[in-house]
Image (cartoon, rainbow, N blue to C red; front, side, top):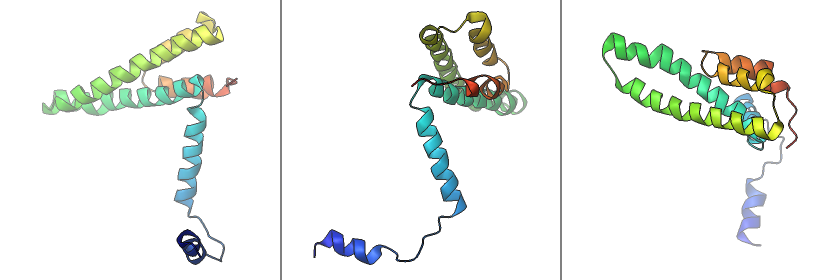
Length: 136
């Protein structure tokens, strides 16, 4: 009997395995993220979430740390991350506008404006982006 088959036979449980809830949620979340990464619209939604989160961290944690307590390192690091995510968000918006022929006054300006408003990217994702069909 080969070694691999021996271990497969001895380590495989014969009773039904119950997967704990956190593991099931993690697996479901990973599948959701993999599905989103398959298309540019999904990547825009993920980058939008991260950009909105970084804006909130910057506004409500890093900037108060800098101005109230004199700790500038947080705003330097989070500001750099937020800037990169912001540029990626704008880049993906422009690419999707060209590929999907979005009308500027119907969709594109909302995406651009949402990146400047706290909680704007979350609202945009819920109201507009999640309802768009994805041809990819």
